[in-house]
Each structure stands twice: as C-alpha cells, then as structure tokens.
Amino acid sequence: MKKKIALITGITGQDGAYLANLLINKGYKVFGSYRRSSSLNLWRLEELGILESIELVSLELLEKSNIERIIKLINPDEIYNLAAQSFVSLSFENPIYTAQADALGVLKILETIRAVNKKIKFYQASSSEMFGEANSKKLNEDSRFHPRSPYAIAKVFGHYITVNYREAYGIFACSGILFNHESPLRGTEFVTRKITSTLVEIQAGRKKNLELGNYYARRDWGFAGDFVEGIWKMMQNKQPKDYVLATGEEHSVKEFADLAAKMVGFNLTWKGSKHNEYAVDKNTNKIIIKKNQEYNRPADVSFLKGDSTKAKKELGWKPKVKFKELVKLMIENDKKKSLKGKIIQ
Image 1 (tube, rainbow, N blue to C red):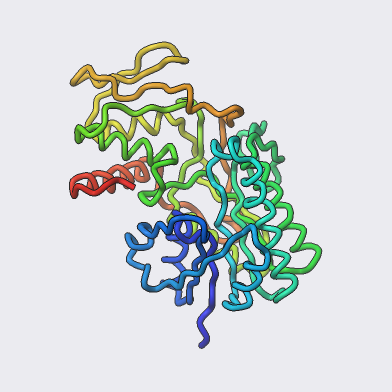
Image 2: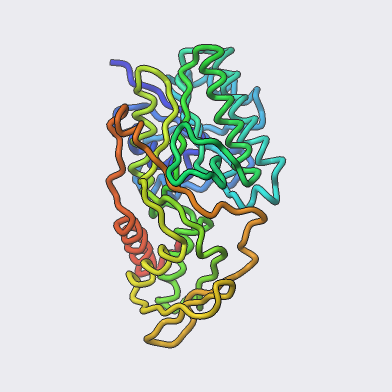
C-alpha cells in the first residue's frame, strides 16, 4: 500500500514536531518546510528522535512560485499549514509581515492547491486569539470573532479564506481553532515555558527572578501532544469541517506561575497592589516573581475558554493531560535539562 505523503509547514515549531511524530508513527512519508531566511532550529525534532525520518524542504509563504514548485515536487496527499508569525506581542511591532505570512500565506497555498491538484487535503491552524474579547463564557465554532491584535486579525482572514475555498471550489479544507496548548517543546518566548524554565534557573542559582506582564490573563491551557491528534482526526473526516480544540478549563498566568513555583520548591507569598504585585519565597525572603509593565500588550485578551463538544461528538477527540499534569510535565523536563547543564531552549 502506498504511503500517504504529508507536507507540514512550520515543522520546526512545537506543533510541527508533535504532528510529524504522530504522522510518522502512522506510516506517513513526512516532508517538513522551513523558511530559507531563518536559522534552522531542529532541537525539537532531535528531542523526539525523528529528524532522520523527515525530509526537509525550504518554503517561503511570501512567494507563491516557491509554494507551487514545492507542492508540485512533493505531490502531497495532505498539507498541514502550521507556519506563521506566531507571537501576538510581536505582531504589534510587525503588523505588515504578520499579515503577509499569516493571512496571504494561507491564500497562496490554497490558490496553489486549486490550480495544481484540488484533491490535496488542507489544514489551517486557526487560533483562539481570533475570539478576542468575546462575551461568551465558553467559545465554540459558532461564537463571534473580535480579534484584538494584528496576529489575531490575520488568523481570522486565514480562517475565512479556508472556508471560502472549501465552499467555492470543493477543496477538502478545514481549520482547527486551537486554544492554548503547551509542552516541554514550547519555546521560552511563550509565557508558560518562560515561567517553567526561568523558575528552574532561579532555583539553580543562574537567574534572580521571573518578570511577567499581565498576571490575570486567563487561558484554556492543554497539552500540544493531545491537540495534534485532534488535527489529524479532522483531516481523516469524511467531510471537511472546522473544530474548536480546548480543555474547557481556564487558569490565570498567576495560577500557572504559582503552581510551577511550588513544583520547583518555592513557597511563595504574594505582596503589593494589583498593579505592582510580586511574589516572595517565604523560605529565603527573596523576590521570585515581579511585574514588568513592558510585557503588557497595547490591547490584550483577558479571558479565553473553549468548548470542544463538537470535536468530542464527531471526532471522538478529547484532551487527556490535565492542567496540573501539564505544568508538572514542563517543570520536570526543564529540571532534567538544567541538571544536565544544557541551555534551556
């Protein structure tokens, strides 16, 4: 039986690595793309032990001719578009590039599929950030979007152009509206991994304290390894549909940091006003966590919680790793890296 061929854009990221691992275990031939202009960061693929099983190709989302050449060369059965400018805060500084990559990049892939081979299945990585400041307590596929950043606005375009090409041209094109999903493979630029890695480094005596922005932003955090299973299930569906993937729970940045600190061995007490709150370790009386206003965004989203009832009913998907397990998984992994003297990625 012929192996299925998958092309994963953004394979060097957290989701790309976990998805590649899943597809390889399912017998796929996996191609992974990276940007020519970026440094090739392969540590996640190496950590999962799958680097030798992947064929890497350079692909630039800003160049349609390049996209077309790669798709014709590989002739994939499935394309998973995970590549994006994925930092919300950075999108305020680079809104034009964010729009070109996260919005027009999606259109260029879909237009290539339409022109080259409409049988290719397409997955678009949408984001819970598209909901923004929504009124609903739990957000599902029918909830309205109110994006609050250039990143989220670009993702809304990517989402709707995927729907349009599905409806207009009959392409198997679907979007996964994923709520926050974390793991030991998350980069330290993201707040969850910044928390776990920095706290481990403080305990080891290599850093003094952890600086955070909005303590009270609340997010629905799950495990990335669970979420890529949902992505794959969407692509095996008889009909292309869009699905929310979420845990249905929400926790604040402060809760995440407090729990992670306990797991590292700190005994925190919180002091100060809401606008200048900081955490002190009772055992040493040292400040472990403090606020830095520079990390606040021009417009932020205070609360996001998802409802993945549709995915549970139609795909049989549900998250396995709970919040406390996720934090522990990340802390334990960073502890191991720290003990081995490795630089925490």
